[in-house]
Amino acid sequence: MKRSLEITLENLEGFKDPKIELEQYVTPPPLASEIVVNAKLMGDLENLVVDLGCGTGMLCIASALLGAEAVGFDLDMDALKIARRNAKSFNVSVDFVRCRVEKISLRVSDVTVIMNPPFGIWKRHADRPFLFKAMEIADVIWTIHSAGSEEFISNVCKDKGFRITHLFKLKIPLKKTYSFHEKPYKLIFVEVYRLEKGLNNND
Image 1: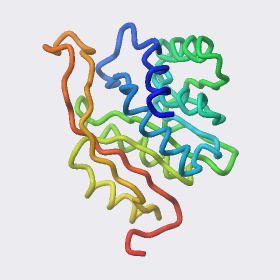
Image 2: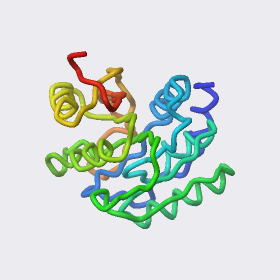
Image 3: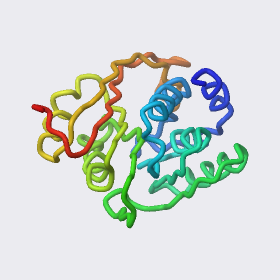
Image 4: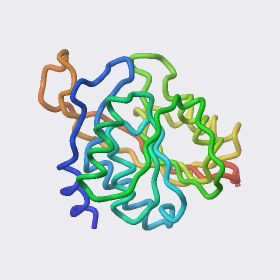
């Protein structure tokens, strides 16, 4: 299932003119497949899947391909136009909404957030509004962060009543996205967290 999904996601259209101030990068298909397949196996796709900062739709479309009801939120209309084209070409039904992450409000329960927030390289702490909003609206969160984030994530979980149930430390290939990138690919270390509400790290 994972390899098949990865191959399918390779055909997804990426950013035409990525905006560095939004730290727009396409989530690599192998990473997206790894996350979404594990979420499926753990029953997390039975909830409504919400992708905060969905970009061109990689994670929410991947979730929909595995049977989830999904919605993606993003500030950038150009990215959302591509995401809608991707969903149409993949023949999946995904809702896309233009909205600042801080303004997102949901009237449903049983939500799983699956997201790849900005790492905060361009703007320090850019990932925090995404993580805080996810903890506000979701029961389960899958989120990608730069290597070395464990202490920060753990502290936020304690403050917000979540627990880290799984942590995957991975090395992924990041495609050349901006003109200042010198190589076609760069290997970077990331941490993928599964967080669950209502539990304490000390339990």
